[in-house]
Image (cartoon, rainbow, N blue to C red; front, side):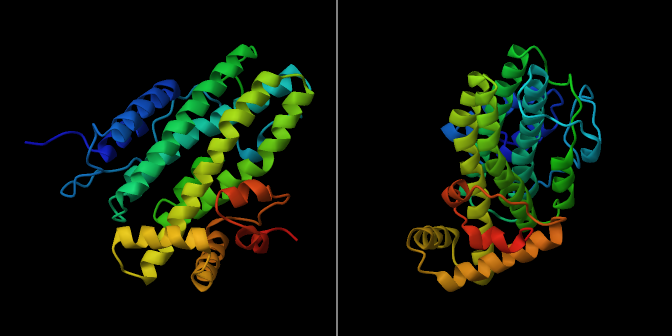
Length: 299
């Protein structure tokens, strides 16, 4: 007889929920159960569960190619503010799926420690809250999620990195998420200049600081995998030494090796160069300085 539901089974239920509001709500409930200890096992070693290539999604959002997306504007008009918040809401809806997908797709397969699951459960819960708050803000602005076209570039990257956890962490969490950190301050000031302090406050006080922690999770687990591949110590030893390295920066040679690996992975899996300007302060708070991204940028 099978026991209680594992975290991976619960993650698959979230991925297979099509309605984005239900997806966010279910994700919040699963996250709370894991964090409070009522879901105790990350996965069942004896069962291999298929992860969908593409999570369930309603077809009410009209999808277009990224190159055909209408310009969002600079938040000077109501129409522009609606378009920007719609775009952010759509991004967060995919971010929910990305967080549960990394848990379901890679956690057991890569024999990741419990802390990995907890980090991405927290990310998933945050993304669900961001989606719900932004969708409500969109309604307050007189629009709704699905009223405007959107693109699925974020999931295209997930598909391209579905066989490689290092690539997934580098591209989604250290390139795309960090790009969000680069542009959010400008977006916030545009809403303020346009007289929409409510949206600006939501982005500045909730979304922005939490996105820094999401980037940090990507950096942390990218480093962890690199160190694990060259040092087969126990998970606890490795996590402890990694924490020490983060605090003291004494392992400079080791860090250089990790950064070289990061450059190689991004060059292989991310098309094009990274675009400045970079939000150096936020990126540093997430655990990666200019040596990580400047060599990959457009000169």
